[in-house]
Length: 99
Image (cartoon, rainbow, N blue to C red; front, top):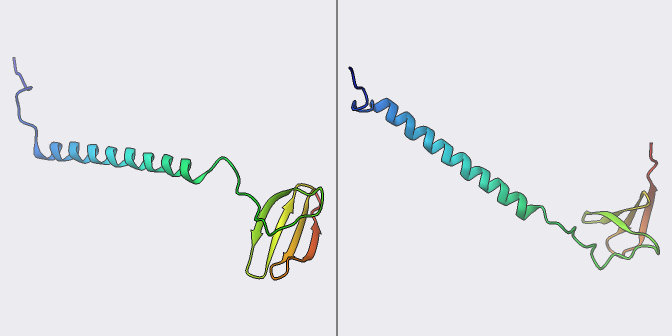
């Protein structure tokens, strides 16, 4: 009988085995980093609306965006309120029409 279990492993096969092990470890580390980023970058509570913004009575903010000259608030009743950044005055009100 021929027993091949005692033969030494070829150098190319050893290199290939190390390469596959290294790539597997890299993929596992990358997956852990992605999971960590998702956990830290997607908080459960939304950011609060800045205190300097005063909305009309009965209006609730849904989204907020800002530029150097103005800021906009999207409300839950499908309106966009655009305010002047310098004095906080309402510049424009846009009603969004649902299709």
